[in-house]
Amino acid sequence: MKEVTLVENFGEFLKKHRIASGYKSQRRLAEKSNVSSATISRIESGKQRPELRTIQAIAPFLRTTSIEKMVMLFGESFEKEIVIEKETIDLARKEPYPFELAIDGKPITDRELTIAIELIRTLRTTEHT
Image 1: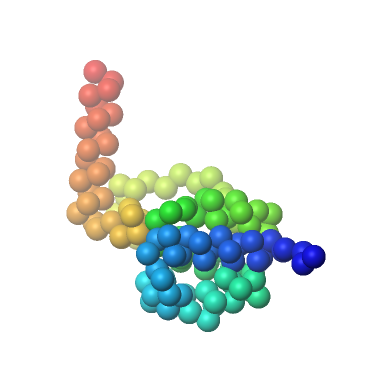
Image 2 (image 1 turned 30 degrees about the vertical axis):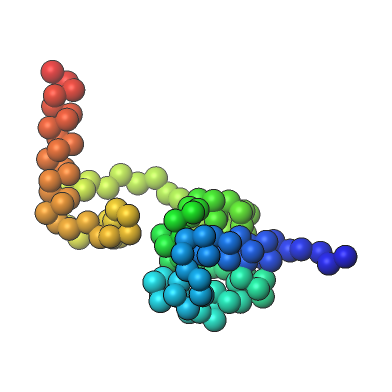
């Protein structure tokens, strides 16, 4: 009996959700996610361990799962790659951010951010009165 490895399980999981999300071919998902179809093929066949950045690139296009589920499935393998530091960043500042803000995979424009900040300020003001 063949032993199934975590990499193979993840590959099966990825293939299932790729197809369920409407990507019949690896090439179509590759085009959307900017991950090579060869990489997707190796991951799905269990020949390659996915890197965290690969999962982050693919996850937004898989409608039937989430990046959280994908990372949880791969579990401890990413513990060394994921470093979470709590840092307060003031979104109202005028300096460039060290990251890109996005909603649903689309970057937030300066105008959208300004409107969101003003909305939050308005909500906070009305909550305290």
